[in-house]
Length: 537
Image 1 (cartoon, helix red, strand yellow):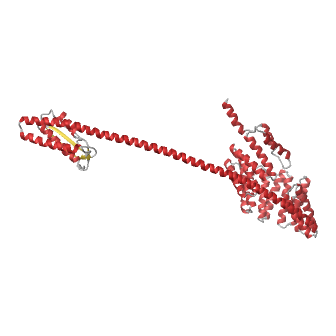
Image 2 (tube, one colour; image 1 turned 135 degrees about the horizontal axis):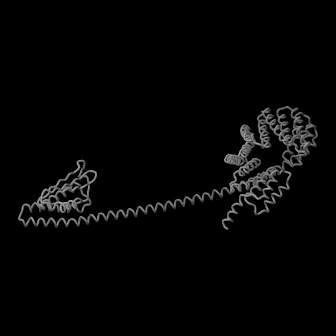
Image 3 (cartoon, rainbow, N blue to C red; image 1 turned 60 degrees about the vertical axis):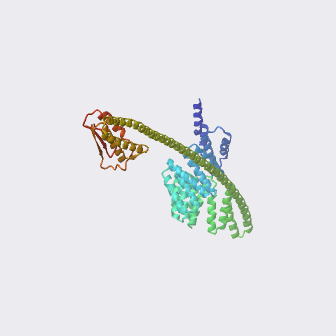
């Protein structure tokens, strides 16, 4: 049961229920005029507490898109930031990229070019990561908008060309038309009017195949503005009038053709015609509450009124224009203040996160240092214990050698004294005297060397030679001995424990040569690689 509940809890985070899916599908065609759908969407977000993370993210995405197309860029930015964070938690890279595109666009409209570029480049990275050409193209298009606003037209052209290549084989005709228009706008700024007109011609051809008169009217209007820039006023008038007529036929409200005609007639000093078209455009801008365009048109009307001597009308328009400008300035100030507050909160949050990261990093280093210290102490303790055991073993070995030497010496002395006693009883004074002399020399060597840790090999050999000769006298010379030393060895520089060889030689004599009557042989060989005693008898 617990596993089932856990599975259901996890699966809830990445599914969209059918009723929400249907609602999202109905919102795909949401426009500026469909405020009822937006209110229903907002109500759904506020009142539904059982939404999954994916459902909430998608509904926030739709809300952000509606706010964006209605020029509410700050609200759109905040909304998309929320859904982007949810998409990150869900590891939904595709929708992350879509949100980043809108975040970049909203930032650019609010004047934050740096943030806009950061989001656009993030979107571009994610698009390449999942190999989504559509999001990649939109990211490049956003970079185009950014550089176009910065008036870096050569860079803007390079980005829009990449966007065009990514969308050229697609089926999204509306996006391709928009790209062609953007490309034409760059050529227009670069004064390359023929290239601009060619791009508009491609866009117009696509709009006719798509049978979209509203898009076609917009393209006709753009072509008219291009001809104005190129000083071809007759061609400009044809296309602008064509755009205005097409808008009337489809009952589309668009002030751009009238504004274009007003500009055209003003350039041709046809002030009355210019005034008529400017007022047509003004009515639409006022109805749509497009204050910036209204200010621009009223500037033109003020100029026309002054040129025609209608100073009272000029003053009326100027007063309205100044009032609008004050409102725009106040709104811009509030927007900048709000944006600054949002940036401050973001920076403050980033500062808190960075501070926490620093604390975590210090704690990690402290933990690592503590662990390394314990490891070092453990290794030092292990070495100390090992060294202590080694010293104890060495001390025990030395003690054992000392004890062995102490045990060997009485054994040898008693045997030798017994031999001297026998020779003395035999009445051989010379032999007894020689034996006593060799034995006393051997005893003196023994006392001199036994207290030392080591002696040179030549002294050991001298003492062993004396010992063997003493044993020869004891056993009436029933054996002879030979000591062979490797010629490459320097016996004066080699150190060995005292009386190292004596026990082996003593055993060889006692158990190998003692019972022989004659012709016994004792051979001691000392080689360079290792000290070896070969006892032959």
